[in-house]
Length: 174
Figure 1 (cartoon, rainbow, N blue to C red):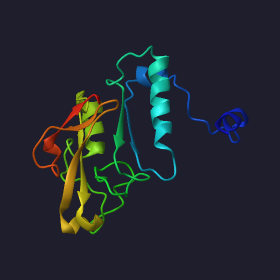
Figure 2: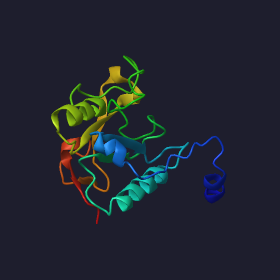
Figure 3: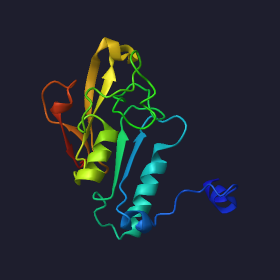
C-alpha cells in the first residue's frame, strides 16, 4: 500500500527525501520527536526516515545536524501513559491546568530551548528530561520523569528511584 501511495503521491505530499544537504549547509539543525504510542502516524515512519538520511550520508554521525528523540508511551505529539511533557512544538498551547509544559524552563527539560541552545550556542542536546504530570494536570505535580535520548540510544535504568530521570543513562540498547 505504501509503495502505491509513494508512486501516485497525490498532492505531492511525500516528505521522505533524505538529501538534507541544502538544509545542513545553511547551518540547519533538525530536532525531531515521535511517540512510540502514536495512534495516528506510525512511529516506525520516523525511524525509517532517520535511517534513510543516515544511509544517504553513508552512515556518518548525524548528531551535529539531526537528532531524533523517540518518546516511550507518548501518543501523537502528546498524551499517553508515558512522560510526554518536554516543551516540544504543539505542547505550548496547553497552559496551567494542562499537561504539556516541561518541568523546568531550561534546555535540559525543554526541547525548544534545547534546540535554541543547539543553534545559537552549538550545544548539541545529549538528552531531554520529560515529565508525566499526575492525572495529566500540571497543578498536581510530577508523577515521574524519564530521560529521552537521541536515537539510536535509549534511556537505560542504572538503579535508584525508577520515577526519576536521574536513575537512567543514555546508552545503546543491548
